Length: 52
Image (cartoon, rainbow, N blue to C red):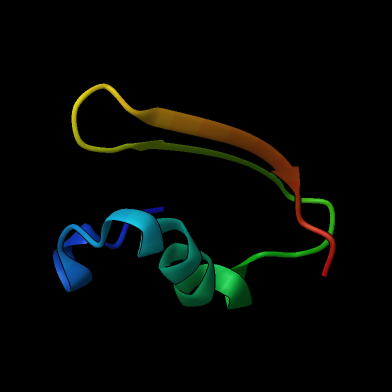
């Protein structure tokens, strides 16, 4: 999933916007891995199971 071509670099809002855009395509039990990179060497990752 990606949305940078629609919103550009939205920093902290990137992942919530992505979930909003693709929520209709997700179903309970789907496994999601998020990875995000910020300014400098900051980064974060999360593994989720979609529940609703």
